[in-house]
Amino acid sequence: QKEVEQDPGPLSVPEGAIVSLNCTYSNSAFQYFMWYRQYSRKGPELLMYTYSSGNKEDGRFTAQVDKSSKYISLFIRDSQPSDSATYLCAMSRNGNNRLAFGKGNQVVVIP
Amino acid sequence: GAVVSQHPSWVICKSGTSVKIECRSLDFQATTMFWYRQFPKQSLMLMATSNEGSKATYEQGVEKDKFLINHASLTLSTLTVTSAHPEDSSFYICSAGTGASSPNYGYTFGSGTRLTVV
Image 1 (cartoon, helix red, strand yellow):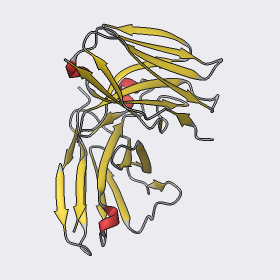
Image 2 (cartoon, rainbow over the protein chains, first blue to last red):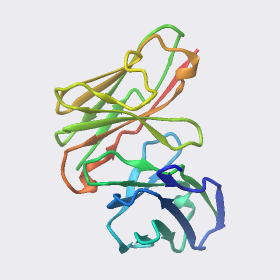
Image 3 (tube, rainbow over the protein chains, first blue to last red):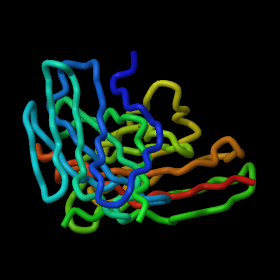
Image 4 (tube, rainbow over the protein chains, first blue to last red):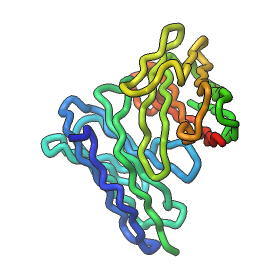
């Protein structure tokens, strides 16, 4: 079983729709949970991070962590064409440690 | 803040030659650098972790003699792909960390290097 599972299927949504992404993981030692956005031929950029369980909101983005279920989610409200990118979940045991990445979801927001 | 500069952004080289990729932290001191490899439509695969002034720790299956990592200063790490072959063609990305506890500052990625070996 991989440490982090993220269904890599592409996702196409119309502009204004809610995008819902999720990952599951197996390592209960993970404490930091992150979502990265990666545009084509660019390095990932940190979008959101959450420590332990709970929700975090930043503008149109909401990250949720449920440690009891080992499940994390990212929601993008009022999606825009500029949100079209690959979204990768990542997690680590502490803030310094190496990251375990999901495979990423390619999201396309259609105008 | 927390900018990581990686170059070149793309490089084409002949099979059998070596290629060096540089990763610089511009406005902070990077105690730890991570080097990743990413295949098309795949996730990032960690290749190695290097701490300034010490030898890099390679992940299982990564040839340390082929992928030479040097982290000689707190602002510069290099990855040299030696005797490159077409199967080494990939997208290489570095990530720099300060050792700070917050992942906001702990994982800043470079913009990546597209290596094509012909």
